[in-house]
Image (cartoon, rainbow, N blue to C red; front, top):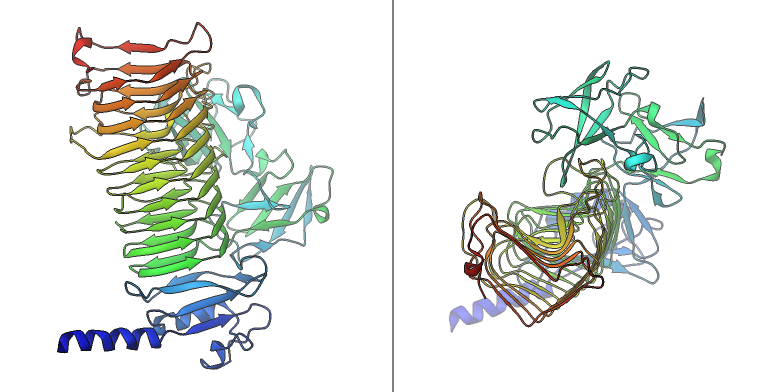
Length: 551
């Protein structure tokens, strides 16, 4: 009884201590007292003040930013809430959600000739990766442009290890030393590396993530000589000057903004923090960077124009939730969960992810709208549209992917899918994984920059090498390369799905270097081929063992 009374008194103490603190970028004043800041009529002003005060917050406290106002800077959490009494960062007043941003407006443009203008701003970060023109993201200058033949790719005939490529048609009329080379290392990998030297037909660069294939593609970016289209830009980190191509137009006709801060929201080993009804816009890297901890929630927020990831969750942060939010225009991944467990991803829109080749990260696992969903997680009622690579990837046990709409994926890279999972090189048995009731449409494919430009390798649902223990039921998959792709996997139950107008409706492939296709069930599906050249079922194996594939 004493323990119960003590617990009740502590709970009451926590809940009664809960306090609201108000911030206004227009009418606020950081010199006001803590007591004054508890009144919306006398708020504090800046996010710097919030960061300095954050460690004194208590569970149940709320930090409220005024709607219709813009707050320049970032938030770093240094305190945690508790279960039932989170610390809330939200909004008050009427109007649009408050905006947290690092975007600065550039002016004082100086003409450098040939339609290129230059502006200086000391606040811009050396690794600038987001520039907006009239509110629309602009691609870093590249050669050749994307509207050039073969999608703007050049091709190399040979390579030396991971640090050099040779293109017999490359000239030295422009020396590209100091620029970046973007190499299509695989169909699913674009690597972005600095050019260390350019001599004749050979480019020497920092090491890419793996050995490239000869006769694959590359392009050059991040050099002033690449600027020849409206809005293309180059930033010189040593002079802090941004160069933009305006052609015959004047910079005064446009609003040009650039990002200045790496992360806009950073939580470090924090727990029970809720972000509610905020707009997080214009991070040079991550809109949210959530490191370790647990139980961070994002509700009804807009995460816009992130130079890398809209939301990066890593170091095994568990029990993450995001609901009712929009994650848009992320240059790398929309939401990257880092395989944390017990995530809930519900009723969100994740759109326009990694649409500019060369502006995402190098290596595998990039260009994905929703990446690395881990154990005991649920992904439902989300809209995922316009993605450079995979729409959604998951791993682990007891993952449910349910009632999502995934449209237009593999736009920049391919050999991917709307929904994808991979078993890895080890034959680990998985269980409790469900793909249920989703609509997956319009796998685009990106053959440019590969040795087969006509091949479009974008699949609806792709169960890749050594994966196991997945139920695929009641989905509709249309207008992709392969509606369902079962690749050297096992214990996959496929039932009650409709596969329509894919180049192949159901495709099964077994390869000798992976575990064999075994113990699969395919039952009561509709495989509807719109034209005779579309097989309803295609089965390829390296052995005489189709009868062992399943039922």
